[in-house]
Length: 148
Image (cartoon, rainbow, N blue to C red):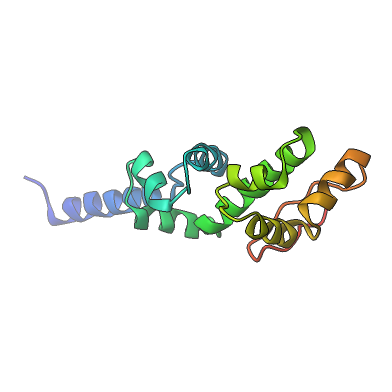
């Protein structure tokens, strides 16, 4: 026969275990960024699509990201910026093509976003990278540049 104390201990241990599971990140940020990049290739990387791909609800994914101190839109911006840097540095695609590849319908929207992330226009970034004078930077939560 199980005692009340034994039951309470089991419940307490199970509760502690469930709390630990709840705090554990669902997937690494690096994996999330790779999945976002894949989703971006086929259209806008909506959070619902990513959550479904991971077998989670949208809200569960949002809570997981909140625990990490980030938001989905921050990850999307970071992936877009890193992809834009790569495409502008290594390809001869036009600015419009780079923007379209990242899900921007309007090249000017892409140019404004890129300038917010990097502090320079995509055209200036490309020219400077070809001269190797601009360091790589990534946007923070507010879209500002990170120091090197």
